[in-house]
Amino acid sequence: MEELLKVVQKAIDEKKAEDPILYEFSSLNPFIDYVIVCSAASLRQVYAIADNVADRAQEHGYKIRSIEGDRDSSWVLVDLDHIVVHVFQNEERDHFQLERLYADLPKKDFTL
Image (cartoon, rainbow, N blue to C red):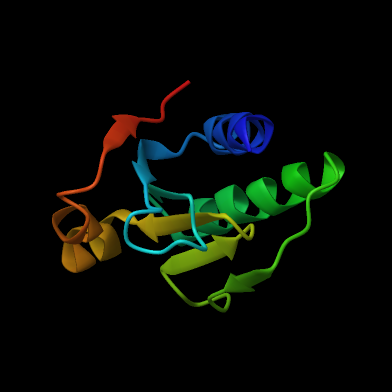
């Protein structure tokens, strides 16, 4: 799990994701250990980040359970089984405010 977290962290950093936060999620859902939330200034960058996460995970032998969000979505979810990555366009992140929803969960800055 720690290795996959490092792969994801590097992948989002490579594409300059903004304000990445790692939440310990297992207390809410025993099937998900971590949720990562990050954002990007443009729709193009949102997809660059999500695609890079998926590509890097697969390069290291991890399976992608699913990628949610079509090419016009400003929120993409990459499901790596026990780790879920949310990539938002900045305005969408401000609108949905997952940080408020997850406020009681242990969290840490996920910047490299």
